[in-house]
Image 1: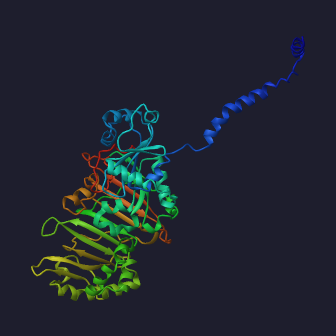
Image 2: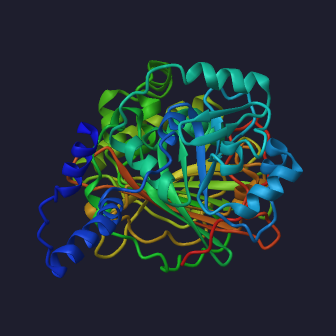
Image 3: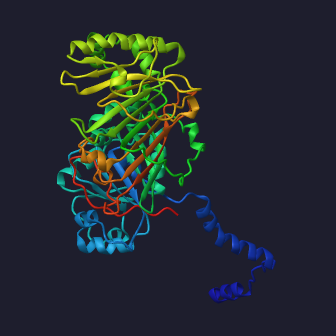
Length: 489
């Protein structure tokens, strides 16, 4: 009876009625619940290839490529993933992918791509010699390369700053290429000591017709932590056309001072000692040489014992011209001691010079002119010194050398295919570069500052038959065929 009474009393209880919320309040709360996650996703940055920074520290050369599922599957994908998996994943890709060569330099290229969902869920088996690095799948060429990479990834990641961090941002967002001193030295070979200011860097890449365009930055090993150069704001017009080539010209290299090229060589005692003992080049001469604007040229020679002739045009400061003339005067007896004979200037080329700035021409005992120098006197311009190896130049000199901010830090123009046919290029350069019609490169930095980061622009004109998409691999590594650069939009 007591239990029935308790049940009846509970039935008689009525909970207080909650007040009904206004419709506008209910709607606001509902919208907040729905839009909150959307706003959070919009405000927070989208996750990028987080593992790429760890791989960058191990890479000698690293390249990023855009998704291109409509194009044929690259050979590298087929080699690393197998034909069937490569075909499937290539057609599903929507993001950037990468390839890199390790700094050990003795292995094939690593394939890197965002970890495919079929492999994440187990629907597709992971390929041999692969490792997951955060959100990326990395596939090595062989067990040894796999072991080397996994061992190196055990080290604690270091903080990336300066140039390396900016290069990483390029590689995470667009088609680009990064190189380290290991890759740079391997590609340019014996030219590496002349280009130490550019031994590490990165460029963004785009293809316009038959031209591959690049823009980025580079530095020497002592400047990798420097901030973005002020020249960053001065964008170079991508459509600017290069000037016409002078007849017979194969290469032109112009710079604000010879210091940019010679600092790596002249800092070595092994180079300085012979210059002093053999040619009398002392520290004062080296300081003048370092500070002098220059233009180096290589031109083809149609007949005779020389394949090409070299000219070096210098713009000494007014207070240094007499010192240069005295140095050249001391050089004469050294050349005579090596069996060369001096000739009157008019016998071998256009006249030049004066009593205080003399001209000289030198020949072998068989009468073959092998080089010399003369001073260029133009109306309204300061005298410049022209030195040459091979036949004396028969054409007039180029324009007067620009100086200060008007001069690029370094400007290079060359015809790779023609230079390669004469055996005048390092064989370690990539195949597409060796086959190209022309290459124009410019490096720039403010003239009135000691900023060590250089802005780079380049234009590579490809031959129609050349594989314009082949990457820039580390020498002595396999050279897989890769997709073409994305057209510039």
